[in-house]
Length: 300
Image (cartoon, rainbow, N blue to C red; front, side, top):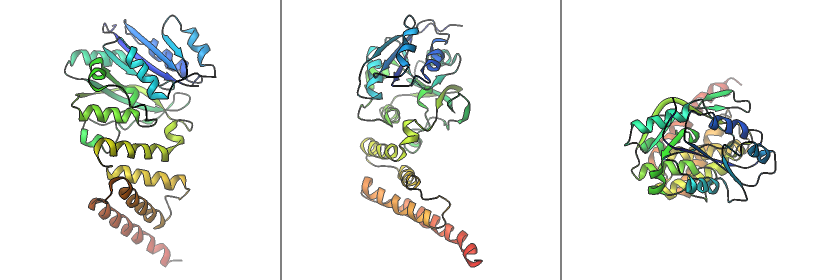
């Protein structure tokens, strides 16, 4: 059955010729009668443009220099005509009929502004690596964990009219900031218990290739949005710094001590204070690691 509501899908792109045709096919094969597909390419120098030309009659595309991914998506949000909007990066995919399923969900739940579903992390060949750790909607939980997978999200046009566009200064957590902004502003979220999309995970992705920059940007964003950075994100940042520095997580005592010290320094940097919960967790963690390490030392 074809969905009768107009749906707009936006794809930002830059030099993703290896994957973009799979992305395009996953959109165009959706059983949505009134589907508007917009691709905003940032001036690719690979095979992307030749692929886009093959689909001239079925999508609208522009290739020109832009100010990054958020700017490309914003151009789409400003031009999209659909009542329902999705955003699919040029290396991700929708699963068959799932755009229609999301549109039907919103049609039958008029009070819901945003719907998100489950998703998979997939590799370069579309094989499933793992399920994305999606959770039921809870705004307080979202402040500590980004459990909403961006390609598995669809929202109504009224969301953009009410909450505006993506923050173009953000390069890693532009989607996370948007979900928080919507949630804090009172937007209503619904969850579908269906796997809607595949989010590609490989070494060259922004998140995988720049974990310290990724976490630093998240911390800056959270301080701006929430007024503080939750302890969990400070721990994540400390782990990313040590991983990048080559400190093995299995190093007895040294690793928890380093994580504790970096987490405390990060708390002072971003929050100007260290929470009692962080100090208690650090004491408990280090004490447990010392107890576990002692038998090995005694037997040397």
